[in-house]
Image (cartoon, rainbow, N blue to C red; front, top):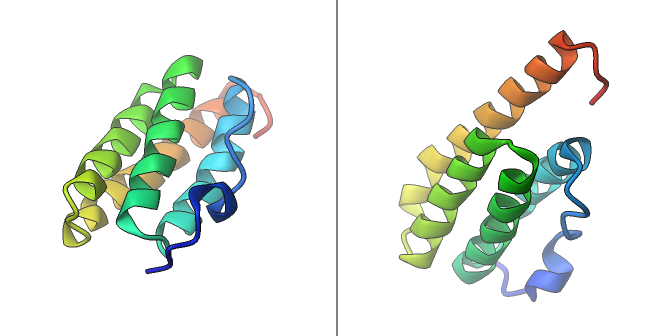
Length: 103
């Protein structure tokens, strides 16, 4: 895994707009796959805070699980919470689409 500083790992999640969180969550998920565990923990923690601020609790919960696994330095344990995050992002997009909002 790369030890690139987190500030260079992925763009930060901007604002508390759910559309922005969904867009940035995809970028952060991709970045998490190639970063050090400490960087993954930091990225996931930031995503959790921003997702919770928009009411996207499933995204926040999945990001928190990633943060906890990465903080425990268990990269094998990251697979399940990363899949949960991907699923939570998809569900949130479908809900937004069903409500007639663009994402």
